[in-house]
Image: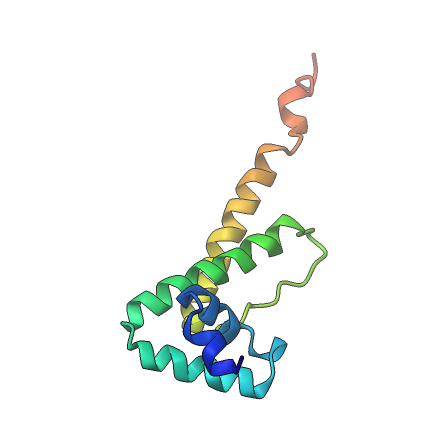
Length: 116
């Protein structure tokens, strides 16, 4: 089975997964997948929607393992603009900080008033 035959029957999402991580695949594979995606003539919005789901999964994984000492690296994407990725990261960070804030111990809630 050739690469062309293999990817002709692949789900669109699987093709986008490959193009979102081209470093994990051979040059020939990436070329064939690009050609197949172009052959399908899908609307850009459909491709970007799937790519955003994949980027969101990467962002979620970052904050699943995140500690305040970690350096946050912006996930890359072939289809999603960098500004959109930054916004996704900001939202996830703010959600993380909100959850973290709910678990903080507030000493002022449990201290005795001065002079009592």
